[in-house]
Length: 354
Image (cartoon, rainbow, N blue to C red; front, side, top):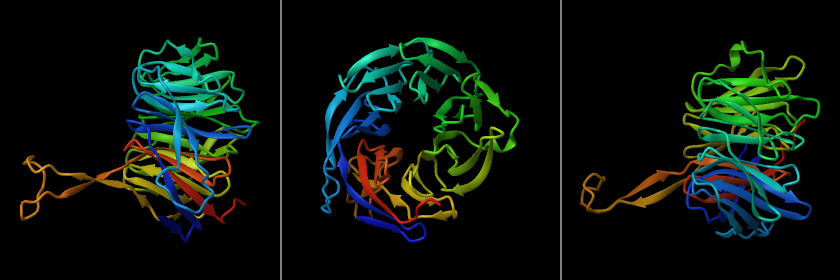
């Protein structure tokens, strides 16, 4: 399987599956510890899974790209989000069970359970120095925690609806972080005061709920994905702490996940039926990779469609890409899907950043 986008000079080569979860793969991140490389994923099956990858540099295509080497349990409801520490030694997870959990990935066990939220937690991230943890969710509150599990500060009514994502600027000279919500708002915050910057900025008030966001590795761009299918890419104006709308693209279906490529001007966009590649420098769309599976229609179910001869037929079920990650060089793409599988692609590009 190979898909080529001539406009963006992107080629994707399917390398295989990672199979082990029993629910939608809601969050995923690539980890590097010295010479050790592995994948971490969270799912609606309530588990945090660690994966050992096969040698994906070979040209042979196999159905199996790796296998799980540890499944960590403890959450009592869906895991919605995760974030790795900068050295990949620890992972923080956010769950619908109203808790966060800090996991020691070397000892491969839960270290601390964060209790204090009253509603489902949908997003979580570490601060740049790994000394603080920031979370948000259905309570509409931004919560600041220390690494000992203590809630140090909460900003109530930070959004008018659920907080869907929190991203901290990776730029060394920036003290900003960004939140998105089901209220259609993109907000800029000072991480030291937890005060909103430029709250009256009109171009950050969008027309539909925002499901996801991503920030590039230099802290120059912020992308957000809407329920109604639009992706908006903002330039982060550090001198004024404002967002400048640079690009807008309509994918005609809900946007579930976003991931900037670290070495080129492209962004991967996960939707309810697959994923696309978008060159945000030239506003060029790549060919979409559509994922679907066939589901047998049982003959005794009278509500299911049949052909004219009364035989069973097959329906194609959409497979959404609810999470995405890339390795540090951007040569491997991992897509966490609603059919419980992770799909792995090799990414080839000759479109470097200027």
